[in-house]
Image 1 (cartoon, helix red, strand yellow):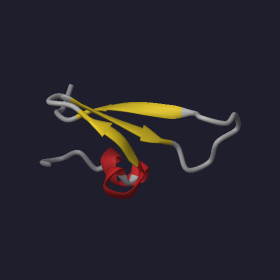
Image 2 (image 1 turned 120 degrees about the horizontal axis):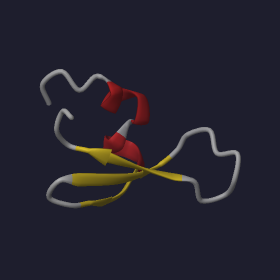
Image 3 (image 1 turned 60 degrees about the horizontal axis):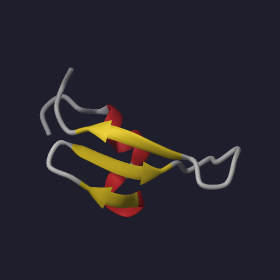
Image 4 (image 1 turned 30 degrees about the vertical axis):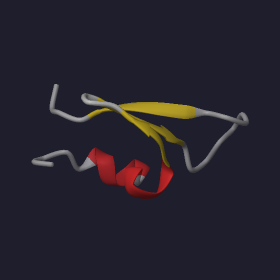
Length: 45
């Protein structure tokens, strides 16, 4: 993961729901609504 420091904010290694070839779906740490998730792109935009 080169230069993807935002990934550490979401901690995909512990909060990953599902990992795909190009995406990672993770739950958010601070959930305002039950079941809030984020989709992280595995590469830089």
